[in-house]
Amino acid sequence: IRLNTGRNSLEYILRCRQYKKVYVPYYTCEVILEPFKKTGTEYAYYHIDQDLELAETINLEQDEALLYTNYFGLKQRYVGRLASLYDKQLIIDNTQAFYAKPIGGIDTFYTCRKFFGVPDGAYLYTTERLESGLEQDISWDRMAFLTKRIDLGAEAGYADFSEQSHLLVGQSVKRMSNLTKRLMESIEYASSVRRRRENFIRLHETLKATNNLDLDLEDDAVPLVYPYLVEGGSRLRQHLIDNKVFCARYWPNVLGWCTKSDWEYRLAEDLVCLPIDQRYDSGDMQLILDLL
Image (cartoon, rainbow, N blue to C red):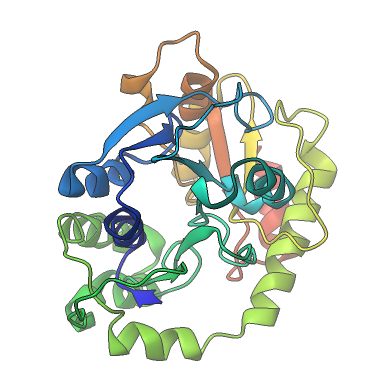
């Protein structure tokens, strides 16, 4: 089902399934809470471990579910294990794993703009459908940050990107706009896969010895970024930004949800998410390594 945002895909699931309670990871974006507040669904947090997996098994009641994030597009095998354990009471957040295939019967949602130059858009895989028809979204007025980025560079477009992100808050569940649908149909998906994997491998060859995350690039994985965890990562991130290398930060809200002794706090503080997407080549990866 083509929808307007990832969070609205989750709202769609919550409205269909009518769960009494859903377990949500501490390490996630604060916007994921919006669907719970809009539907009045109860939620509770859980911790992840150093492998980005559940820190302990969660026993679900019949009317409960578990939401798990396929972190950085690198946890698909683990998603399969969770599906075997929780079956249809599992919800997979693949907003960081656009290319990960859904598992039959498992509610799964994706977002478009984390991976591609589009203003919005999401995909939902589910066996349920809302009874009422959905209004179609309109996206033409959210394109400013994309056009500015092309003409003036990523730094110039970032303020517009942040503003557009705020405009997506509180949006009702709608069908994907015609503009976003058309843009998504024009993408060279195979070349994007190849470039992301090549860039990831190039960085990992040099950085794996100092990376405090033990990363495994599965054969069919297409990562969002290269997650590099080191002491003082926040200072390193700023050094890269000062040198015109934009590093997304996931997610500062976690610092207010957790204590300094929690693993998630360290991820939010020190994880440096190095860009590897299809706009970059091996020369760009070498520049990043030189700066590091």
